[in-house]
Length: 274
Image (cartoon, rainbow, N blue to C red; front, side):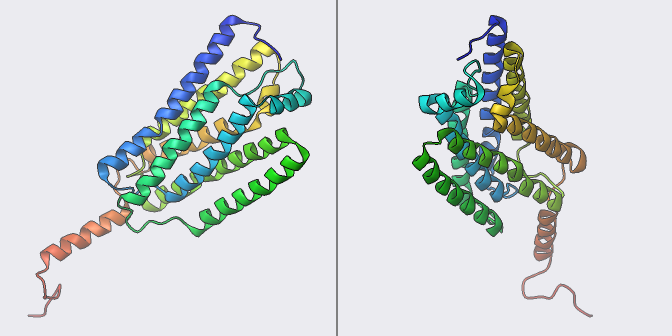
């Protein structure tokens, strides 16, 4: 197993890694706090949360397995060379554990708080079901052949797929409502910083080792950063440029109907011929 060639780069790597961990971990709290204060989850797309839970769960399986399992590490070195470093750091495992916990809490808030007319789509439920069935099949295949690296690579591929699609429902919902009300932008800003730090951390390791193996050796982490950054920029565009300070169209219509109801006396039509 390779070791660091530069102490300053090693320190930089650790600092960037834990900065990414802090940014990404804190990014979950603005939405949780917003939901708690409003006692409502209206404006937060439920598909996003459900897909996100599957994403972080599969990413946790990958990170924890590669970081703690000597059998998985042995297969990794056999494939990429014993002069390479494991592309998963302690902060990656810590982040995954925290992410699963906070996403589960957000999902619980969806159950107990006002949801309006929002529901989880059948499409998302189908996707999650198919993904876990596929993972179960791969588990038994990997178990019989002891192909541990291949197996966790499947989980890594799943988390990349879920990362690519999980943001789409929220982006579409913001577009249809012409508003980001109910969706915390603080979450996005911190997620953006975490993505940049995560990518920078991998770059520092590559510079020290004079090798870019860790980018394609852990392609999931690479794509995770790039996809997250892309959608974070899209959400920032929606929040600050396209729909700044706008109330959702649905809420505006509801308010108008409420005012009409208050103005019109009970039992009387809204307009009468004299």
